Length: 114
Image (cartoon, rainbow, N blue to C red; front, side, top):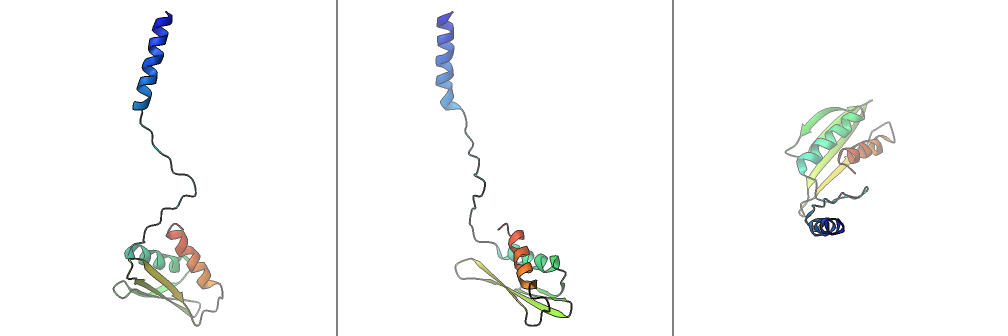
């Protein structure tokens, strides 16, 4: 009986290295890869809509978005960089809400998973 248990234990130890192990990502781990232009453009447009802007210009070819809210205008520029990254800028010279650009930027970051 002891030999049978000993043999079973040895077989289990030999089979253990054959088990598959799947690594689980640690919470808070961020994989940084350049964002695609299309994803960035769509996230910028949706971030503007999140804050109640009505988009009057949506031009993916030039990377320009223009939206209006409460008499103010917000212009967004989405540009490809030479290193493959994408630069997104939100600008408003006449926004009546001083926190509008910050809220749009935070909404954009959320949509981009940041």
